[in-house]
Length: 483
Image (cartoon, rainbow, N blue to C red; front, side, top):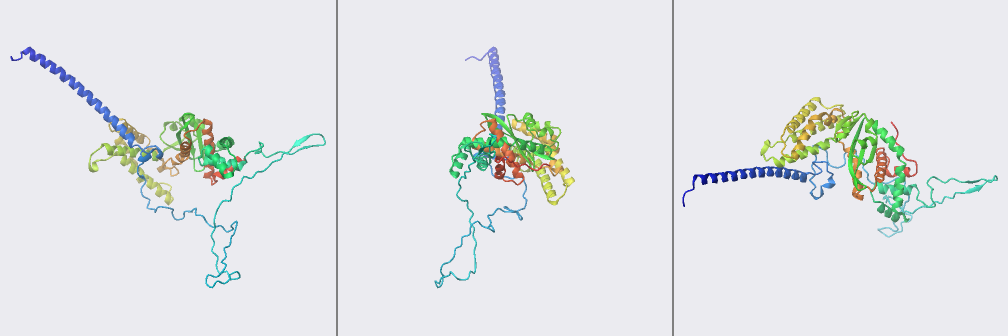
């Protein structure tokens, strides 16, 4: 075989050069694809790690992978259970029982003598609390008509609840609303329970009618509560989604220590908040999450929820732990510093409240504020590798921009550390939805909001749910004292 010529070698080099260029392009493309896939895997892993402890997801969404409880608060030093001075709810004997049954010994346990006339030397009391058999009490109202000598026929007036030949009275209707709206039974189960307990026929339509009628009587009450919350110095606000009429709707919450208001609306943002009627005239301190429409109400002073913040910081720390394999103390995350500083401020506020102080130590607040800002500054200047880390950088920038809003609880001790008060109110919506799956109509959602606003406000004033509902169905609704 003869040696290749120069032209053949040149052609071979050219072909190899083209193949090398193609391979370089392919390697570059594969590297870019690998980078994108790594970023996507990181995002998916972050979604899998998301739970109720490091995000705003409800605990019910954790399923079998529910994380072990991990409190973000420091140990209080108190023993578990009821504390000294706590008023318990143990069943206690009453001074005047309805019935007294005496259990006498007939004969002596020693000699067998008759004890009918023997001296009583001791009495041991034991009381059994029970409910007597329930039976519907039927009251017939006879509307009498009389003819006067002048020829005019005049009829007597029946009470307002008598509006049909046969119908349920206010107490029975109160029980319907109590089981349906208060204890979250479905309409069908409520009807079955009442039929079994009372031995009288109750249909789901009867339950629905009683609920609609009760909610309709609450319009003046809701107006008064809205006015009271709008005039408060501090109020909590939140919103949550719910399925209604086959689509996503929203339940909005506004509350103080004495009033609670729920409002169902098709929208989540400012349109719904305006329709609720509290925030447009509210000039106190509004505690809420970082949902942007709240900030459009410039007449209020804003305080951001630190429970939300702690969950977001926990997500940052967990992501850092998963992705940074640096051993030892060098494996440091800015979110841990912010969390520790925030909890240190909370401990100082708790101590000030216990001691009756009007403010916390200024040096403590200044030092911890600096630590919070320095940690957030580091997070804000990181270079994110994926969308998850972009979200973490946005969180750090939000902390920097709104440090005063997050620390409002430390400069005004009447402001809460969290927005849990509002979340507790709308939690009832989630329970209702877990039972029913959805709200069939917006009218039903609004009825639910009205009745829960009424019973929650009554509870804040020491009025039991059933007592409040009994007054409502008796067309004498309870109203709180105005301030």
